[in-house]
Length: 237
Length: 304
Image 1 (tube, chains in turn purple, red):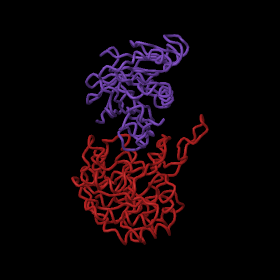
Image 2: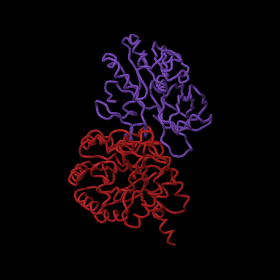
Image 3: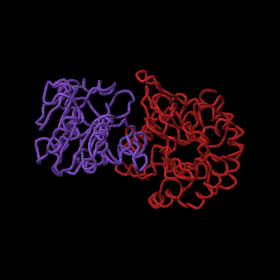
């Protein structure tokens, strides 16, 4: 991991309240699937950096999908090309890039950029409406209002197609409530080969502040450093 | 800059990485080598491992953050086994931060630390606002501060630094109590007791309800307290609270700190301390004063 300066090279809406922001960094190690970076706005008042999945990376150029959540993300999605950012990364553990079945809720599709359109993976992708989906090629879509694909929630869509999940790794990402709902709905066989990438409010992002812990069968674990990816069965959500 | 001799220790420069923001000295190797620091204070350690508080443990606030980690740590035995071997390879001043709930446990912990050659000094944490017993309970009373410091001084083979709580009416009085009991130096400030309420859930934002405020928001309070403590005692002061630039650090030195500590800013810009050190050296040069003349200069300038 390194700390470096990044400059926004493009910032475009990718869906309702999600922006695709490309950042050219001075230097960056190559990230692995599912890793993230801490991002802060340089030259602005004190704020904690915010964690974002590295959606795509080409050499020093990183692409983030940033959803408007609070004060800092609201500011970030309004920043124009040329804005200087503080970038710390790549951070966290990573997914094996072997073919996998992926279940991504909302903006958490950002954790799976490396799997989209490649290597025999099957992608389940859901959001509230079609306007909340970014434009990607997924195998199965769900929306709560039925405006695209399956009408209803993503967990239910996955259950109707669970034969798709054969023996490949199963990866999920989304808010804690989604991961909990998913775990409660699936059987042990699925749970045993499922890994979940967690979202968390982080202080540092590199394992020092101990602010982002999650309760697991092995005690409190740091989402940023011990995760963000955990075997689903270890999590006590 | 010349090295700084204070509290019986020699620091290559005045910058210390603060306890709880520097792990066990092995977390920032990707950013810079710890030998670039004057010293570092290890994450607070207790006799037994501590699980810490349940999440949510941190929350951002205007110009700062509140934490209630609850002194999660690996315990002294694992510190010795897993962390000291790396710390032995370092050259900057290594300070252990000790936490216990009772005097007897503080004594036991101090005795354990005596056996670790590479630890140069101990900082006793009588000011953590996020634990149910011990911590700040000790540090808000001059009598308890004196009692604990005296007993720890009796057994410690290393210099003893007392970390003061800002959550008191008169910090000068606590500082005097620590000095009277033989403290070799004082470190201030620990975080300020604070809380945030989430108006959507109508609940305190942190699981522990209250936490400790740090970051630039507390800097003016910390500068004021260093200024007051400098007038109250003559032992050296390690000053800090919200430092994120060379100019911030200089304020603490001018208020009376011999050394300065950087804490929360390590989370924001983990590579920053060596950069700040360079800028600081330039700032000092620009003043036409020696570093030692700058310590507490605001008092002398004010009285002339």
